[in-house]
Picture 1: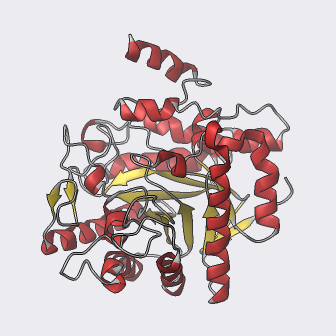
Picture 2: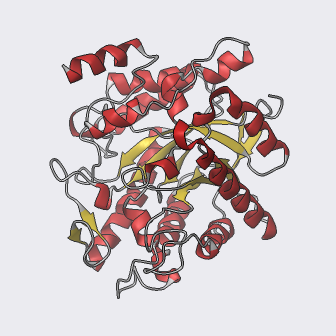
Length: 386
């Protein structure tokens, strides 16, 4: 584990190691999307785990665009709670880089408590007019500035997993206004949003990055060439990576798939474990694309949890060969948020068994945690299913 525990750099910040805690939706916010005590405890545990980077889960830019009933929502009303979250993490581990992932759930919104909206004519939900998309972009900017005010070290501009910004990027986005059709129009939301955040942030040290799905596995989705195509072709994704590199973004976080539609692509399970190899390929592709244009944008890889302890030598190899800069774990952070410090101290780690229990909780719209290793969630799941 020599490579995993070397220091890294992301933007102007140094990291103590190369391990990144990926954003996992806990569905544990308080009223109006406020930061709850349960949410604070989740990130306290990750801070105790000494992750080099912690990315706080899918924080909605509006109160009516929620995929989870108790999702976190960034607003001036909730700002003090997010300040407490930052303080809770930094008091325990001031060296960790804490990022807030900001999002709009769009067609993934749950209509029982939110509004399902879409950008593509005939898509899932109410069709968004031109001016409303512009207002949502403004909300991303405002959410980013509030994240900086809360003390976060940066933001993750979420354009993955079927959410609104991912839908905008797809070749299937055939809108006839400035948000659709050409690649230039389909990337406008990201380009203009990041440019405005960069111009208005108080410090240039405030980190800007994005998690995106390299290939979604749906017709006309990201990683294809047209609205009628389903076969993977990364030509446009190469253009997207080059765009993010030339824009000076500090990192990209490589994912794939849509959890609600193509979940095994996003998070491989034991019966389809070898899907993780696609993620390794996507990560190397992203890194080599950035190197080719001379960009210092860092790359975070994904999909390591399914390998359990066998992920460690794979992660080492990816770092040693410079195919990735950081290694991201998602489900594993729920199974054992203390994994990094346990590895450093040669202690037993509770490795995620990829049972999909956390996904079942997410689908059931209850609090999300590990029902295998966390006593609270183990009992909570029993009570929820009785």
